[in-house]
Image 1 (cartoon, rainbow, N blue to C red):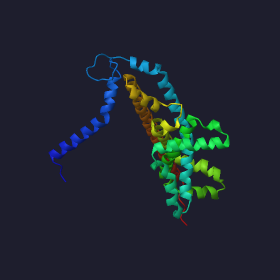
Image 2 (image 1 turned 180 degrees about the horizontal axis):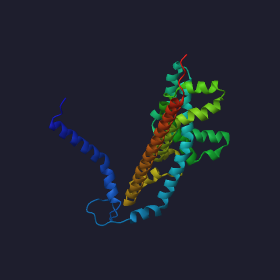
Image 3 (image 1 turned 90 degrees about the vertical axis):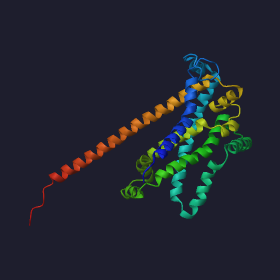
Image 4 (image 1 turned 60 degrees about the horizontal axis):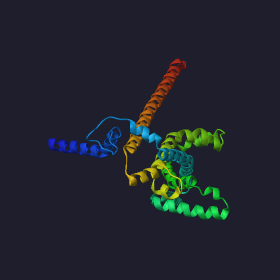
Length: 295
């Protein structure tokens, strides 16, 4: 099938519009972060400056919200990844008839609006802590971690489950036949196989927690995160300091992706070298084995 020049032009135009729509806002914010006017603007470019980055780091509310977002994100990772791992393992162990109902129950928080999760979290824990005398749990940070983990753990479970479905159960059976215990099989066979999925789930959980607003704005109570601070600033009027924050976040994201890709390629190259070394050793062993004498 031949493609006409007109179709090629349309396809190239579509790709150009797509990337402009995708990267255009980032380019505008990146340019306004280095422009001198107090209101974010790209044109006219009145002068190059780095003052907005200094004002960003001098903003106490912004830095406090950033610190709280990082702290909450780490706590959500510590809770969501183990829960997702447990949910994925249970999914593969229960009977096929119960899997549909189990899947519906564990995935339902993903389908629930974040506003409902946030309000439900506050109402439930207010009643629970009041009746049990554990008022110290009724804290904005704790409620936000619980509220976010209730649906982020489902994302983690889906990622881990996709990797777990490719696991060969014969490895577990062989280890058990050789005398290994169930904890040894879990830590020495299953977890190393799930390491890429666990890392991906942890990254997704942290990013989902860091950018979450709907659940956080209700469950955070008197505390504040970066998203709630930014929402308040947007209502009052934005400044190029927010553009500077966007530039930093994009730069850190791109740098992290580059570092991950470099480490992944090095690991793949090392695995290929080990495989070649093993094959070479096997060939040398076969070449050194004397052939049986004729009868």
